[in-house]
Length: 269
Image (cartoon, rainbow, N blue to C red; front, side, top):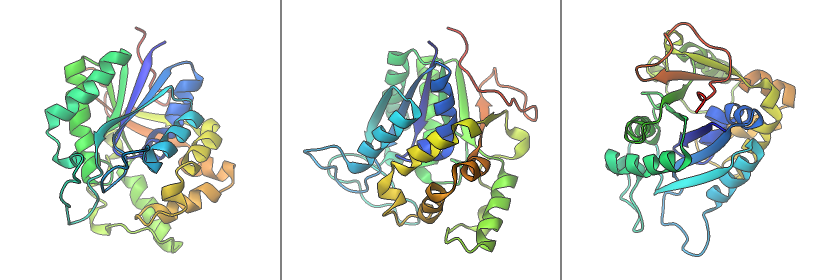
């Protein structure tokens, strides 16, 4: 069957940005592979066992129906003004040489015979440096491996702005930079695919709940919102996160402004 490879920066990104699409693709018979650049750790990895966030990722992947999970071997770069030194055992992803990281991803794309790569838009969504790096590495890896299609996960910038204003009005403690709202994600006119995933809301929510480290204990800027999301009734969760958006990259891309509402399925091999 045609194969979809989803490339993400950290464990939990795969659910928040593409979880419904991955569940839908798996249910429709596609092979789904999740690749993460980092294991979510800022420090040195434990030598005797897999990091907790990678174990949680594998559990979430099973919920979504993914067949394989791969870590490219990099450390989390963190988000904020300070970029800490590399841990002793590996490089922070943002410091990785783009071609070297792209070769690691391209090896997976070749092994899987990937027909479609999911990556991130040029803004890295909300601008996390590891997410921006995913965009550049994903684009180069697809070139190296000859992957025929690349869809970049995003959301309409206008809708994100409305969501953040609603979050503020409801006094949900999510930190964001209101001045940056004009620079995040993608304008609606650039989006080529809007994928309806409300039928997979239960799987998406269950997969998000598997990320205990971030949902139950996380102190990051999205942790309060994630705790709220996993407690929502499934129908309401589906209303909030029942659609996922992509920009098709490359010469064969769909024309911006004419959004496809169907699954961004891989082409027939």
